[in-house]
Image 1 (spheres, rainbow, N blue to C red):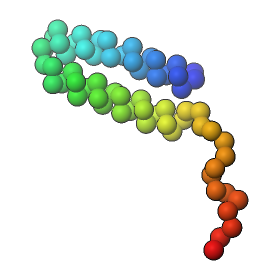
Image 2 (cartoon, rainbow, N blue to C red):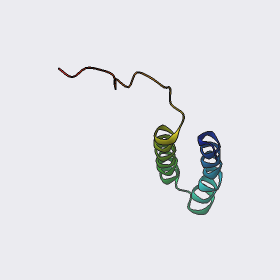
Image 3 (cartoon, rainbow, N blue to C red):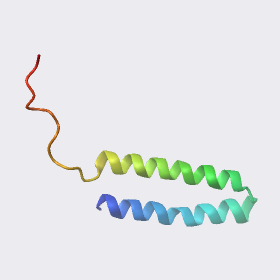
Length: 64
């Protein structure tokens, strides 16, 4: 799976999350906090494993 596919799947997970928290217990605060948590996790995984531009890693810099 590509990182973009994983991000899309993670966003689809928010639908049952919101349905459970709003229809099951009616707790808006928990729904928002869970959404933020999923967002942070997806963003972190995308930054860690996603596509990156090559170059500007300063590996050829001379030590001083």
